[in-house]
Length: 67
Image (cartoon, rainbow, N blue to C red; front, side):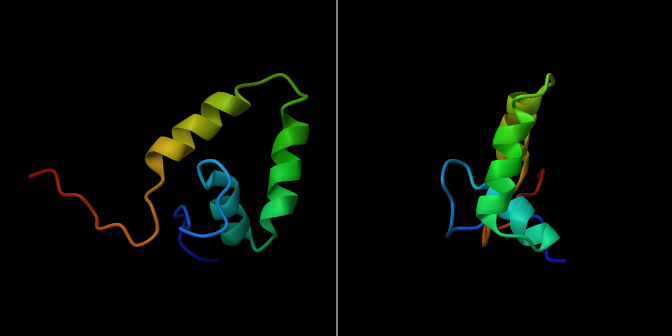
């Protein structure tokens, strides 16, 4: 398994599905279909997507220090 980072290539909106697909070894299309199907169920899927978009670092980005 690779690190959980948003890739620079293969992104559609925020790169969250592409990052999860890379992490779990599936295709990005499969992960996007799973996400869309999960939106048919009740729950905070969009909030989780936005939270991951904000929290996951971009691929190749330097780690920010607090000081």
